[in-house]
Length: 446
Image: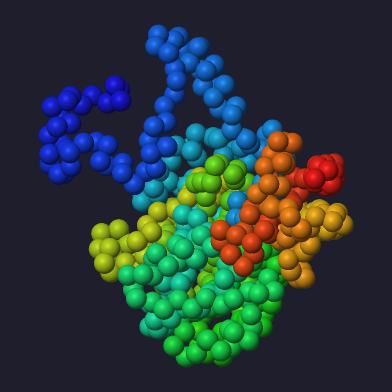
């Protein structure tokens, strides 16, 4: 890399210091096919020529600007009002950093405060923090909170929770020697009988996603009652868009409600950065990880905002911290604020209805073909699982659709071997009747 000003001698000294023979030895864990990647650009190109060449390369990507996408599974395409980009691109928002000095950070602190307020309104919970890295870390931090609070070493989670969320959970809890019990979801929702058998007084928390990974609606009220009978915390991982129409966690007595807020005014962004939210009952306020912005008055009596109720150990004595997540996704939280304010309560309810109506229309049309059958018979929000019939394979179906300019659903066999030859499809408000009908028409030609 010619633009890095290290001499050959510099590199030799560094390699000797860390005890490896070559720079390539650092990359052994990266597949060789990726290590050999290079941009075939000739020497001596002008700037316009380079930009033109890079633009040509970029057009090999398959993106939602040129393809109709029915892929969801945790990252969702929703329409983003233009006001979100317009306001979020103001320099005082996208250039700000950490708000430790409130006298110069009032804008940032107010954004955090408003985000907390909106998330409490949406979830029906008492308190929210300033945001987390993403949905998976928010769910895992909720489990850590429950282990610390209850001083118990067992958590129960449904296999209908996003597989990657469960992987993050296992990674975080490995060092704590915590037992993680996973409950099956043979019919698309958590098995209540199995939950009753595995939960006991040594359980710190029960973790349930709703709508779950398959898009199905869980019986959160019943699960909440079962959980609290054993003095365990009930942790709900929810899709905030669904809360425009589904009962919020606060109404079924969830102790902690978390989730991924990418859907609130943030783009797919190749999978990140994303935005986790974290809300709790007021009794858990001082156990909550991350920052909290509070409202107060300054020396002249004017309304102002500060970071509050946060132990300094979060920053300087990490071994005593409630969490080692000491930052937040302020810019993405700002976008969520603008998005929620632009839609309002009625807009969120209408958005939820559109997602339900369009996904159910697609479901009914696809099930009318002789190539699919529904994997589950459950109520669902905007995702559903279909199983391919006969000799058809989901990977071949997706390859065919891609040639037709359509991104199909997620093949589930990698995450759930028992769902071999099944795919998870997502339909949001961004899909028109014409685009859904086109999907059905193309599939009818197989």
